Length: 251
Image (cartoon, rainbow, N blue to C red; front, side, top):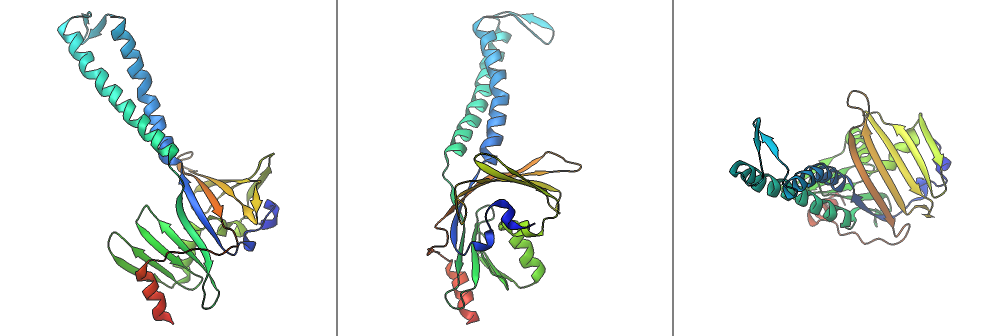
């Protein structure tokens, strides 16, 4: 793929700070919450209207011990579950984007490095063309990778635009406020990127949709928004001391 087809070129990106907001969590909690809520509302209406119901094929009426016992347990449980997931959904929707990556130049040799915050695994990743340093905050250990295969794997996992240049089968659609890129990756993923037309070197906002195809077609794997800030300007990078110490040992 020729990157200029998108109307911009990631190769012009020298430095930046990227923040990420994950929409998958609030999406899942919203779906679950909305699944329980109608059931709660239906049974609440039945109770308020004192509608007769059958329990174990036995007719019961409002005021019967079995009737009252059922609703006294069912309504609080179902209502509580609905409320919990609605609160989680609101929390997820109102969360601010988190720091995801800083792209900068090494002050010694001016080579590009990517400092990545992998919050899911509690890892700090220092990625270059020649090596990767991964510090796990949970287990307090530092791992170094120098194989080309491992470096490429990590690069493709976290730097989503790196695989664009290798694409053969893809679709680019231009709309009024955005440009859309769709393709299937080599890992059974259907990917879609929505680039905002608010561009400074690269788009200021990019939405990412990832789903599976094949046997488990349509399963959502990722739904995120990336915010590109301070593009090609001086960056502030708070590198973990253990990674700093390891980098200093290379000099």
